[in-house]
Length: 133
Length: 133
DNA sequence: TACATACTGTTATATTATAACAATTCTAAC
DNA sequence: GTTAGAATTGTTATAATATAACAGTATGTA
Image (cartoon, rainbow over all chains, first blue to last red; front, side, top):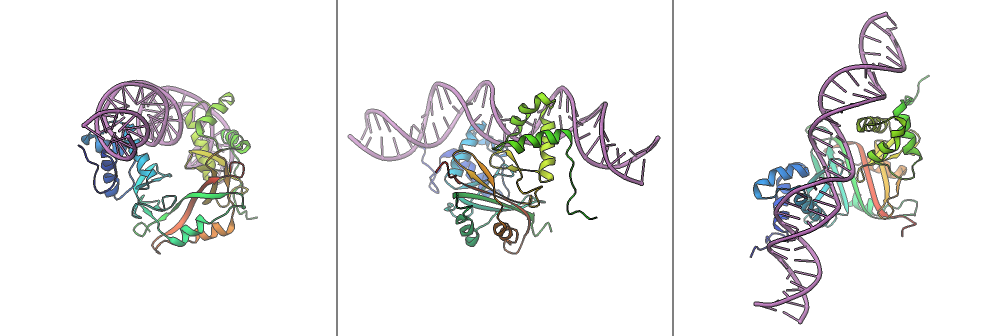
C-alpha cells in the first residue's frame, strides 16, 4: 500500500534522506544524517549509506569528496552528475554547486595526451566566499 | 641569495614514507603504508598521518580524494600543489597527475559569479586508460 | 646555553564505510 | 490476481580511515 512519493521516484528512506539534504544549507555528513533520521525509524549506518549511494547514482545529490559530505543537486534532477564542480569556502565551509556551461564543456572535452577519454569529472575549487573575505 | 622555495629536508619518518609513495606505481593508502613501514619502526597511525599531512603541505605528495590515497608529485617539488589535476582509470585504478599549463591557468583564473576568488583547486577526471580501453 | 619549534612515540578513541544475511515490498509479466 | 525477479529494508557486526591527547626527543638558532 505504501506508495512511492509522488514528487520523485524515491523510496521511503531515500525520500527522507533526500529531503533532509535538500533543505540543508550546508553539506551533511552520513552520521549527521543518521542522527537526524533516527526519530523516523532509520537506525543503522547501512540504511543511510544505501540511500546515499542510490541518490548519488541517480544524480539527486553529490558527494563533496574533500569533506565526505553530501549536497543536493541544484541542476534539476542533475543531468550533469557526471560533470560536477563545486565552490567551497575554506572559512565557513559553504559549498555551492557551479553550473557553468563553458567550464563543463571545456572539461568534458579535455583530452590528456590523447591517451585517455574522460567520462566523468569532479572539480572542487577552494577560496573565501563573499561573506568571509 | 634568494631562493624561490625553501628546501625541505625531510625528517626520518617523512623520508621513509615519501620514498615508499614515490616508488609506488599506484596510489597508496595510509594503512597500506603503515603495514609497509612497520619493519622500519613506524608502528602507529598518527606517525603515518603526520608524515602524510606534512608531505601534502609542502607539495611532495598529493591526496587523491576520491580514493583516500596518496601519490607523489611529479612536478618537481610541486609548485602547483594548489592546482592539482588527476587522470584516473576506472578500471585499473591507475592515477596520473596532469600537468597542463592551459588547464591550470584556465581553472586558476576561473571566477564564479565574480563572488569568489579561488586560491586552490583539485580536479579528478575519470575514464578508461589506454590499456583498459 | 637556553629557548622555540618540529618531530617522534604511544595509547586510546572518533569517524567513515561496508559485509553479510534475512525479511519485506515493489514491479512487470503472465 | 499470481508470481517471480529486483529493489528496498532492517539488523548485527566489523572493517577502514583518521584524530585527540600527552609525554618525550631532536634540531635550529640567538
